[in-house]
Length: 147
Image 1 (tube, rainbow, N blue to C red):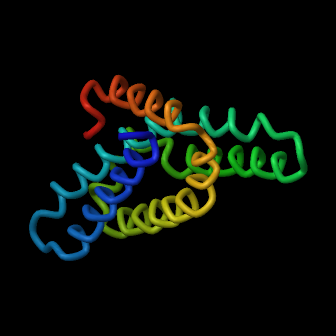
Image 2 (cartoon, helix red, strand yellow):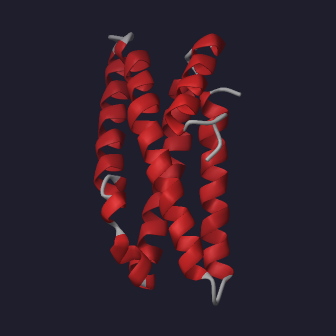
């Protein structure tokens, strides 16, 4: 397993929880709790492993395209921190279905941007580096890479 496969699996898990939330009537609070837990973990992994690795990739290239990519990484990292950085204090989402629906929309948009714009940048990392980063994620999570 490598960095991108772990992040892709995280995205699949989040989307599955969001679909379950949309289809559930009675057990939404459990789905919200699980989704917020997944988001906390995913945010930590991205902030501590994924974004720094992307900074290294973009930082190697001083061409105009490389500079734009580095700027993109910084903008999306800031977007990520702004939209998801307060998740540990997001008890409001569990109390408000409208707020949680808004969170779902913001996370979905973020996941789509990340997959379309940042995953291709991360694919520039060699296989060994992607695997090392996957082990760092597992260490952060205290397991084999799954939450």
